[in-house]
Length: 195
Image (tube, rainbow, N blue to C red; front, side, top):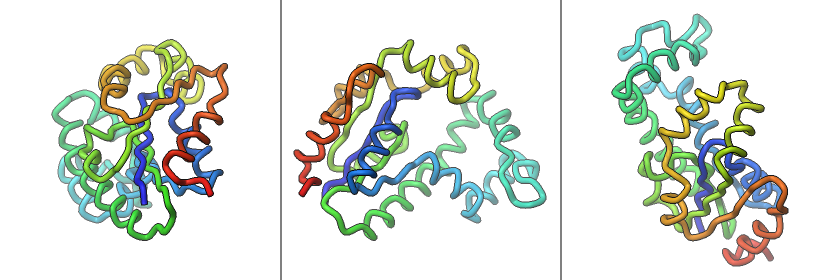
């Protein structure tokens, strides 16, 4: 089995590529979605977040108050590091368990933080999906409602496209006007995921 990481910065289009892989029969583990699930299901994470930031992290129904948590995390870089040190290992462990349950030639993991989370040692190949900065900003603003400044702040906290390209085995440019499906098919064929 080949474990492929699909990486890219905010607004790069990595989710589009991941959806294409899923349609072609490749199971995809979405780190962002899974992290959100673990933050409301994993008792250790819940306990630690409450210890760090107070009971207000969760409402009476046990749902995570994301706005409250974001207001605590993004004001202090140390808080971001503390939360990442708590959540990243849990996601990595959950992913490794998930991989063991798969029985296909290729599986993928979609993540914006492969190297920052320490997951690079549990994947075999890395695909970076990338686009120009202006396209990434416009896409993110459109889908999330974030301001340009908020998007730029997020981008500044992520690895640069140049660094990701240097560390990747494959790359797909997703500028919006070019067809990327042929690139995804070629990649999957190279990995042995097409029969």
